[in-house]
Length: 363
Ligand code: F6P
Image (cartoon, rainbow, N blue to C red; front, side, top):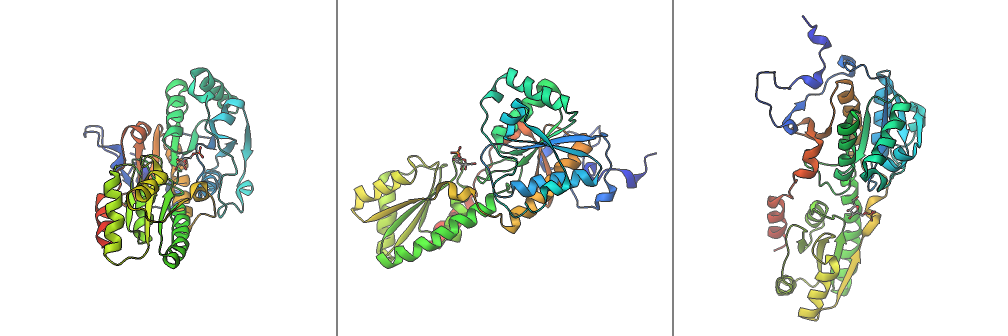
């Protein structure tokens, strides 16, 4: 009989063989001491890369991967420039001292890229060969759904175990409550909105502020609520110009001399369309601020550092446990595992209740 103290807690909530396979994304593990984790898969060497748009906290995640692996006697290889670097063979050994003093730094010490070569099977074969030459037995990919797609194909075509760690400011990944970088991006955008409110109030002007979020309005909605905005425009909803003008007129009628309107980058036409609609329909003096890539930089806030640390460690433990083709996340009070394919096939909707709350509070 197996010694229960040696059983990996990563399996604690897994269904038994004769039980129906539940949605993997709702399986959670409870915190436990690291000493109880066992390298069931016998992994001796893993690799880590960051891919897609950078996000504050990626460095904290790299550090967590390297330190957790070292703790368990596993070597780590860092791949530079994401899948592009993997294709080109830009790999190097990463030890625990190589990741000293980076937990507080934005960006990614491994560099990142949006790789085109990785889209071809030939490109992926070259990358897989580099991993095999280096004796890598598992790959951790820190990035968004596009990066996870690349990882999924690597596992499908070459049998290399892969685990995804959600790193994107957009927070648009199904299977985790939050993604690494999101909290910092919201703080950065909020700081800008607070400053814009000062000048908006002084000049009695309308300010349209465009925040990042290509496909989802998570940043926009949180910034709107936390910044006390008069209205928020999400990629999920499109409004006619008359509605936009009506919002502005209604604010003025309620005695508001200035207004802040938050627009997600992915709203049809973005902040420019909203600004034009207001000016064309009302003739009111309106200013547009596009926050852009500033939201991707800066020191990660504590929530992102903690999330990155937990998920970086969880990714190593998952590989040790023989898991693959899934993303580690946070939800249901613990670590979640979501099949990689779900991250691009399923959608994490913005909270309609928070949207309702934002509308209520802008009365
Ligand atoms: O990483 C996500 C994101 O910041 C989106 O919000 C934005 O639309 C996109 O990346 C910008 O990408 P790039 O830096 O390649 O222009």
